[in-house]
Image (cartoon, rainbow, N blue to C red; front, side, top):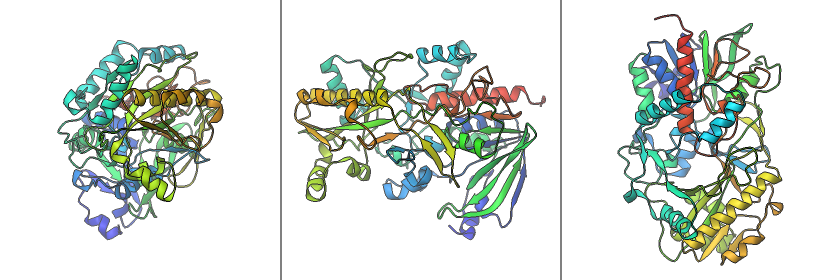
Amino acid sequence: MSRADAKRRVLPAGMISAAASDSALRLNADVVVVGLGAGGGMAFHDLALAGVDVIGVELGDYFAPEDMRCREEVMLPKLFMEGASRGTVDQAITVMQGKGVGGSTLHNTNLCKRLPEPILEIWRGQGVEDLGAELQADFQRVEELLDVHPVPDDRVNANNHALFRGARELGYRHAVLSHNRQGCRQSGMCELGCPNNGKQNAAKVLIPPALNAGGRALVHARVDRILTRGRQVCGVAGRAIDPLSGAELQPFEVRAERVVLGASATNSAALAIKSGLPDPHRLTGRRLHIHPGAFVMGVFDETIEGWKGVPQSAECTEFLNFGHDAEQRVWLVSGFAHPGAAAGLMPGFGAAHASMMRLYPNVAAIIAMVHDHYSGHVRPRDGERVQIHYRPDRAELNQVALGMREAARILFAAGARQVIIPTSPPRLLDSPAQLDGLTGAELGPFNPSMVAVHPMSTMWMGADPRSSVVSSHGAHHQVRGLFVADGSLFPTSIGGPPQIPIYTFGRRVARALLAGLPAR
């Protein structure tokens, strides 16, 4: 996209492209929100509707439903950070994170759960305040706003039914999941964006009302620095980015006495570090949790066609426990991969790989996702890239092994004739009797291939500035006027989908910020 193309691009009223400007942009507002995903989008929405002069700044593009294409090679580079190639520094774990107006809510599969009470109890013990009735009321209001409801029985596809069938046979605890969908046509391509506008996500539910209320949004704009005067925030600065080539264009600056970081647990922490913000206890960017997960695939005689219908409507929580001493910490959830990703997971080369791919219509898959106690850390790199340091220790690998064994057991109980476990070398199993040999001692980097989609905890909440980065309502302990409103806030891994908690804490942060503004 050339600058001329950017100028011709039709965007919603109140939204402008930094790439379309011929010169450096200089804007002013009361509040600037960095990142328009779940947390930043909610803060932007609530502040704008309260009459605050607020600007949301987004690195990615704006996508109308008609811009979405159900093709991996088209949408992955557009919807994901670093063209969907972001990973840990050793590249052993792919870390999928979204960008664009709506952030990861553009590509997620709409899983909605509140924070479990055991997690809230742990957080209370770490000094986080106000986690009682008011938080539950906020959860309820967010769920109503986003139209969260259990997936109807007639929309549970064959891939999800495989998990239900196997869990029932084994007597494992399982349940249908809740989603935020309205007008869903069951195209099955949620992870590539929704061409039918069926997701009740940030881009659909939050951003348009905010713009209608007077909020402004600046897209194609990468924030490189948080501006401060002493210990008072005074805005952000960065570069316009060509949305097609990624080339850096002219600089921009937004002056504001309050800044909300909603750019994700990796990008917000990296930006804070890059900006040289005061951090006397060297906490920012640490405590990174990511819920690392591995796919396990079952081959069935009957046709599954897991790419069709509503994805990820089934879960098994038999092995998911919370607490510092939990011996089993694995969330099992149905999953499926589009053809390109599936090809990367299927074992073999050449003709052998082609033979495996011909089984694709008969494959059901379960993701074994670890509620991780291990933590890594984040550091900035150049441009939008970050360094993610995370290599699971033996305790975490034991959980990965447990998850893969039990996912395989569920698939066998559901009727799979063969199970594929993506270790190195891959295991092709014909019987659950072969599972006992799979232990964490055999696992390590690239063994198995792992993916993470839930980074969190790098700027966590707490009452004590010596042991936390922000307050219980997101206010930075060291810099006045700076707030955090994304998954960075979580003091621990949460063991489930984070979007509803992130939306909800985005609302709490907006409320706290509003309380400190002059009466309007």
